[in-house]
Image 1 (tube, rainbow, N blue to C red):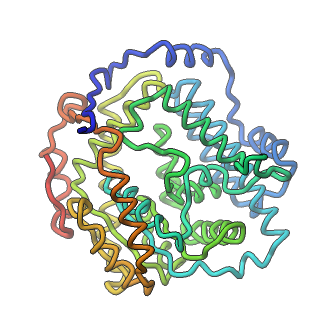
Image 2 (cartoon, rainbow, N blue to C red; image 1 turned 180 degrees about the horizontal axis):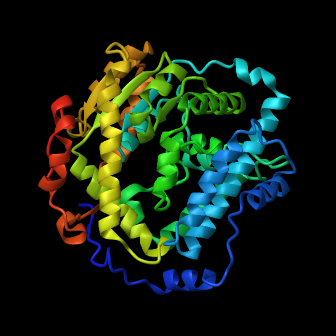
Length: 417
């Protein structure tokens, strides 16, 4: 049976259902405190710990929380979500600092020959990283673990062997599907799915991920001025700690942020093998802004289609210009460029190239695992969405595509309708 093709008729003028309206109304009169000191106190009370590690994070926390607080377009639901996110990040930072203090040998763990997927959002990175993670010799970051990488003291699996962090992620996923049910057809972040390590970078309040949660251009500008070598070093420490808790040592990673941070990425992981994915920026942008606009029906007081598309055209251009500028920082003997239109039936040959560059044997068991994943996860498994860039955002594909000639000139990218 063919997967359903979905259309969102009320994307930019949403008609809320009773569940969505009830949640927004319930939180409307609640005061959400985003004062950094109060957020830190909440994390300390939650964990029973007080040492956040290097104190320079405080300036970044102030900028991060300040950007959220200054975003007057947020609904109280989104302020509540972001408040909880910051407390969670601070709590995890406390737990990491404590773990590193108790087990200093963590710093001696090698992160061996990671495979890192680098590409725009919606360009096949999720498909590729989940495929590679099917190889049981690889350590990957499932979504549930990306949200709570380190367990609270005294917290462990229940009588059925279920990690409470996983159980909380399941509850969160089920709730999200009730509030925004069509997200599953766009980007289903179910608990077991492999997630981006940008979530881990956020423990250092140094990633671009906040831009996906609100309209925070001041955070973008602050983030772009940071010394990312230091923050990618912090990421390496997190990966070392996660390897200590649960191996193996060979990671598969991915994040769009790496497009504009190839220097710090390769200085931190010099023996990495990098898989670059490339797709028509028009397809990427229309997919991203449609997904964001759909979520904005509960995140924001009003949908701003013009502001949304303007921001992400500019943001994607920044990411791609940096990628084109720095692509040669990754050697041809440790990287491969993958066109999106090749990620639909030719994956095995791509994996053969990646594994050869990585110096890792592509075993019969790994091949079988890859084939099972491909068979079980066809494109559009949860349905597909009908996009209307012109109707919803007043932009034509040709108008947007004209901004990206530099990218088409550099890589094998096929125009999509």
